[in-house]
Length: 559
Image (cartoon, rainbow, N blue to C red; front, side):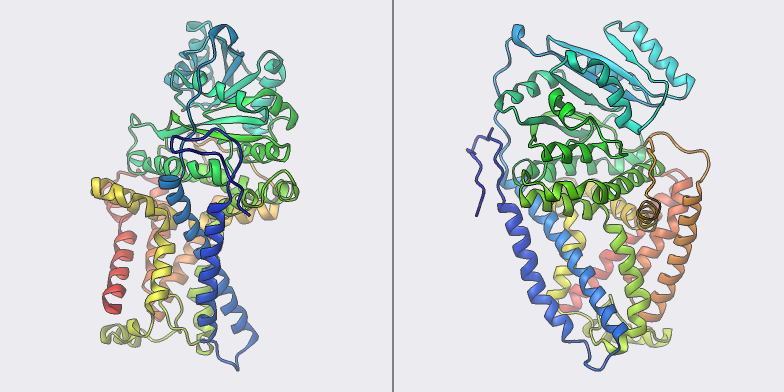
């Protein structure tokens, strides 16, 4: 039964959610499974070993997961772009009735004056700004002190013991000041708030006492001068344009850790911010278990920086991966068992986490198709460029030159669903690529490189938190001076993976494997060098070009 929401063509204000989007996602996925899985199983020979059956079963599970994620990306982008209607703007609160609010600006060795000033320059009558400085570097501390001395209306809070990451910093301040404020806003060191941030967001709390937070929109800061950010900053815009909006009505909307206003009573009832390196998703989950909702306001737009270089991106990605993994086994069971949370919100959290943790499945899939299945493929008749037996190089080359390998490898339906799954994250850019093909193509090539090159590192990050259960907060803009033992293990795994992929490419003819090998092989060089290095900046697009060439070759031969 559909859970309807009150909505007009102009927008909506109610809290009720609608499960239509997830009914479509699950429906399309089930249709795909019913159509393709039996066809794949028909290629499995009757008299085959248990190992072969398990391998083929694992192959089916992996592609089923990829199809689910692909369908999820397509449907949520469609709903965000064409179905979702932004919430109606609300009348402003009279000045003499404005509830008091605190703006919390957090920094740790990354203070930015422009961002701090945006917190002070709010067009709102009843607010205070607190600089929560966790800096360990004396130079950064002095920058904060200088800012405070020049802007007396800003108040400084430092703590002696820097415990429990960002969550600890927030809790330390709020335990001291929350009684004096009905609401508080959270802003990261790079976040730039519009002047009407508080004035536009706070009125929405009057809609319902169960609104725990109001999340503003975000965009990439165009002033950022990093070449890495210029190539990939579009990723921030894509996420907030085509991913977040639909969640407001059709899924689980989370507090993103910044650019939002939170009800103090909700923070208190949730027990404060949980001690996690990804306190945002955990806090959002705990709020929903208490019956609170978050809402998204699309016309209040904050600016944020994208990681300034590849190393900073990897640091942020590591924090997200480990924090999400920790959340799934520590806190998600509580959300799953809550009778205050709808089934499709629970499913949305799980699939969203799965999309982020997809590198773990992807690396297992690589090992499966490059080593395990080629060894057992004589018992498995499905000859596709994902699965083929090992053979002498001369035979592989002859098969390609004759066209026999391609023609016996694909059926159009399987080709199309794998193609859609692989490029689903780019579906929202189809209109943008017409308007600015060079910029969008650069982004697609760069983003594909990030996904492939960091796959093994992400796999190890996830595996580490699963095995050790320990996590540490890594500040995106603050770089570590020495490689940790985990980083050294990652390097070893990457070299080993490259060797396997290159060997498999030349002995099975699976050309797509070489694109992953090139990306992973380039990873240590890009990690250490500058993104705009002339040689590396050209090399990172090679995997994207090769994949397009392989797709075009298969498409032409199939047609």
